[in-house]
Length: 150
Image (tube, helix red, strand yellow):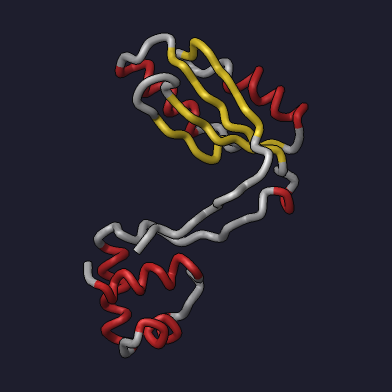
């Protein structure tokens, strides 16, 4: 990975819908070399995909919470069952396994407090191996969807 690859990544993180022609102009390459570099970044897994960034409030999911999960036990089967179950809950936007206590951090969305309570009681508390859940509400996003540093 060189400076040109980093420039390509920076531009695409800012605008993932750039055409190869526009991308090439921004990174000061001709189209063919830019296209080759882009395909290699995709093939090697540096670029893992493209997606639209959706405003949660605009689709009725303006309530967000961070849920801290402490596991009762952390054997391989329990951890695997927990992670599969978490991955199947659409309202869980992010799930991170942590060192220390708590064991997991989940970022969840819902329409409102009532919907969050139902999600918490019916889905999150019923996850395999969970000993304790603790949550805090997101008041404001200060840094969101920041591009990877160059």
